[in-house]
Length: 113
Image (cartoon, rainbow, N blue to C red):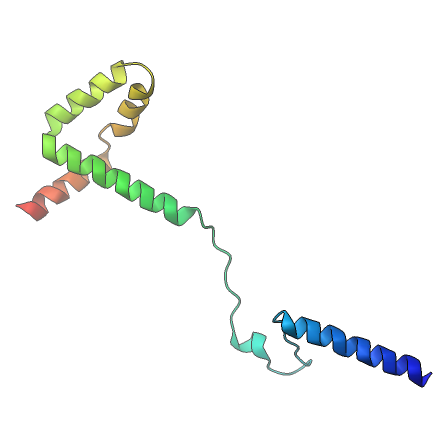
């Protein structure tokens, strides 16, 4: 009987050492352990941030082109792209002057003049 208890004890010690080596901690019930003082990190989507950066860069590029070549020329070029075939038509759809682009272009104009 004592031999079985001793082997269970050493097996338990081996499991604890393995868990500690992997970075796991142990907390006694009713105590304020490590989990009380460290807040669990929230799972955030790693897709939203990069998409927002791409959207902001695209809007900035469109607004700077709109500001640089002027509204009439920009709208004319976009219209010609929309009347063409293939990817140029898609480019014309993506490059159309939306309200955010026009407002950002106005902001660029105010900042530079």
